[in-house]
Image 1 (tube, rainbow, N blue to C red):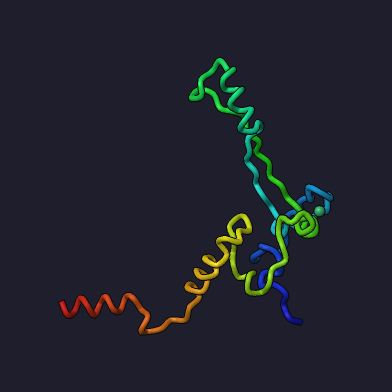
Image 2 (cartoon, rainbow, N blue to C red):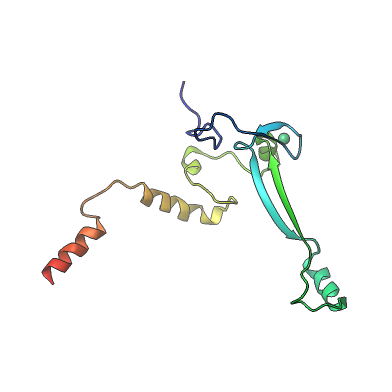
Length: 138
Ligand SMILES: [Zn+2]
């Protein structure tokens, strides 16, 4: 059988099994390395209210910090696709390994970097060899 994904859709390297986590949306039990995870840090108050609160506050900005919301969201694959956190991508697009968010404006640049990293070694393109030759002539 052909393999659909090199990593079988998960990040289980050689560990046998991994602990299950419950999906935030449907509570489906999903392996931790397969679940789609997003860690969100956001302000509890929006920027317009924040200014009003800071003006009314007795404490200055240096000594007090506004409370923030720290939430780790975990979804099963079905919910992540339904909520459009991740999307179905073509084989070519799948080679781009995004760090956090799908950013179409940076897609071309990341694809280019991938191609450079996986380029076959060519003698004429070797930057180190050229430097050595220059040193010898000098
Ligand atoms: Zn779910």
